[in-house]
Amino acid sequence: MLFRKKMERACTYCTEATILDEENAVCKKHGVVDRWGKCRAFRYDPLKREPETDSAKIDTDFDESDFKI
Image 1: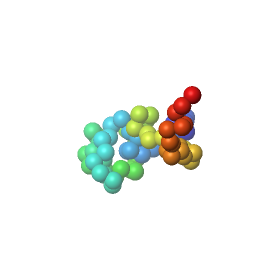
Image 2: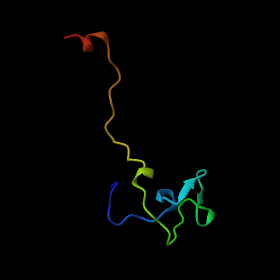
Image 3: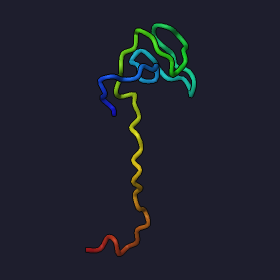
Image 4: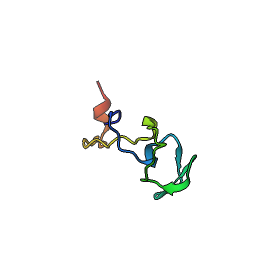
């Protein structure tokens, strides 16, 4: 869920951190930290979350007859 009340603390979702690579982030308060680390300065930013992919796949095998009325 994107807007849960009890969000897991991780620098990946924090307003104070910027992601560097797959393992590290730069925190405004602590410098270079582990991306999945946590601290008391955590403030959740919902815009940093990536939505889960939907298991439904879109069919892309169309032909010209599919677009005729």
